[in-house]
Length: 215
Ligand SMILES: [Zn+2]
Image (cartoon, rainbow, N blue to C red; front, side, top):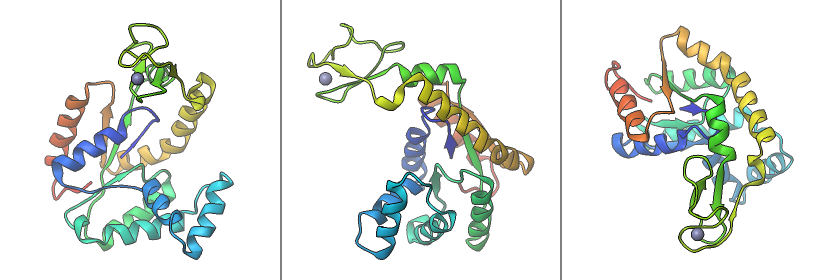
């Protein structure tokens, strides 16, 4: 599963995981697990991640290979946020072939202006963590939490310029990937603007109609 920042991919991955019993695997989580350990690889990864560089595709591939060879992945698994480029897609093809599995790409997309409002409108209570949106779910009193009256804050990386840059980067890096799966008839495009349960229903329907499916 891939999706624009803010399109709700993580939520859908979790729901699908609960419903279909596929483990949800995110490379971010795998990396964080490794980094918190005390191996030579952990030190190397910490350096890479702290410097803001991207982690090598080969390292991600070996982490994924190890994780997906575990017993809970036998019936299929959900990769949350992977692959992100064509090279990773090729790696995944090889991995899936070695596991006698097939790959389907579920792509979440939403109009960028809608996403922009979703992300830049987000406000979080500084005390209880309740999430509001000044466009779609405003608090009763502007700037303050309905529950405990504490001030609301917005995340520093939710500014319009930053969000626009993230969306453009996503668009550019995933366009070839989406074309690749579309050309091989393995693309499921989901309109993430629909209500969560409708999106969920549609994904399950499509997955159920695939021959020998796995995600
Ligand atoms: Zn609160």
